Image (cartoon, rainbow, N blue to C red; front, side, top):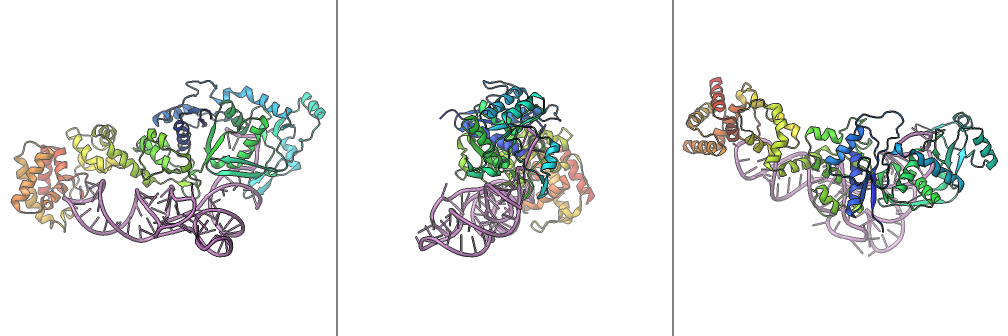
Length: 482
RNA sequence: GGCCCGGUGGUCAAACGGUUAAGACACCGCCCUUUCACGGCGGUAAUACGAGUUCGAUUCUCGUCCGGGUCACCA
C-alpha cells in the first residue's frame, strides 16, 4: 500500500469553525499516524465574496494548532497548484473524456425549458426537481450541430438506470443506493467551470489523495463520486465521513448561530492545546481511559475505529474542564505569561506581587478571561458590608471582627518582611496566642482586605500580594468602619 | 415527500452475543481547608419502543417513533 495522503480543503471564509477544525485535525492525524502526507488545498471558487485575509486565517489557525501541511499553496508540492481557482483549465478536458466514453453527455436544456417541462415541486419545505434525462439520447449529429451553432451547454454525468452502487466508508461501513435514485448531475456549468463535486473528484485524484476525510453531509452524494471514479477508471479513495459537531440536538455549530469559532475561544482565554484535545474527543474516543493528549500523542493514539457515527453536541463545560487541566499543568512562568494580560485588565496598580496572584489564580482558572472579575477588589476598595463578617462555623461577626482585626493590625505592624511565609507564621502565631480558630482571625481579615466574600487565595496570600502599606491601610479603614 | 445515516445517563462516550452496562464532564454529599478552588472519597442518573433470531441481546434482523443529512449550472 502506498503512502497515505489526506487533504483539508477549506473555503476561505475568514473564519475557522470548530467542526472544520476537527475535520482538519482528523485528516492530519490519519495521515500522520501512518507517516503520510497532509495536504492543504484552498477551495476559492466561491463566485462572489472573497474575504480579505481569509486564507491567512486558515494558515494561522492550522499553524497555531500544529497541523502543519506537507504541501499547500504557500509551500508548493508536486501536485500543485493548490488553489482551486488556479486549476481551472483541467476540468473541461476531463469532462470531455467522460463524454467520449459514454459516461457523460452534453445537455442543452435551458432553465426556462426545465421550468416548463418539469416544474419544481415542494418536498419537505424545499423546492425539488429531478432532471429528466432529456438530452441523454441526443444523436451525435444533433450534438455536433448545437455545439457548432454555439448553443450554451452543460455536461452531465450519465447515471446508470439500473442496479445499485455501493461504496465503503471507514466510519459507516458499506453504504448502498439504488442507481435510479441518482440524478444526472451537472459536471461542467454553462460558463465552462466545473461544479464543486466534479472539481473535487478530479483534484483528489490528481493529487493522489488516498483518504477523503469530510463531513457526513457528503455521505449521500458519495455514490455519485464513486461512479465518477469508475467512469474514469480511477481507484476511488477511502472515505472517512464524520458526523457533525452540534450546538444542540437540532442545530449544527455554526457562525450563523453565533457560536464560538476557534478564534473566539482563544480570545476568551482557552489554550489551543486544550481546544484541540477537546475537539479530538468530540466524536472520537481513545482506546483506554486517558483523555488528555497532545496533538503529537494523538498522532500515535488516533484510530479511525474510534470515530463515532452520530453527531456530538459541543459541551462548553467539558471544554472548560479540559482547559482548566491544561492551565493547571502550565509551569508558573507559562501561566504568568498567559495570565498577565487578563490580570492587567483588572489590576492597573503596579505595587502588588503578581507572582503571588498567579500562584493563587492558577488552580482557580478555568479560562483566562474569567480572571479579571476575581481580582476586582485589588484596585477598588469597596465599602465593607458588616454582614460579611458573619460566620457560623468560626463564630465570627462584626463584633468579633474588631478585636481580631486590631490584634492582626498590631502583629502585622511589627512585621517588615511581607512574604507569604512570614505573614503566615505571624498570623498563626497570633491565632495560637489567642487560643482561637484560624478562621476567627483569618476570615475577618480577608473580608477587611477585600470587601468580598470570596477571593482567590486566603487572607495570607492577599496580604502578601498587597504589601505592607496597602494591607495596614485597608485594615485600619475596616476597623474605622465598624 | 424519496433516498441515505444515526438513536447507551443532562453531555461526550466504552462495551463489537454472556459485564453488578466502564470512564469523563455536569450535579449532589462527605473529607481537606482562613473563603473559593485544587485534591481525595462516595452518590443520583442510560441501552427510544415493539416484535423476532438465540440457551442468552445494548450488541444480529424487521417494524414503529425520534433526530440529522441530501435531493442546484452553491461550495
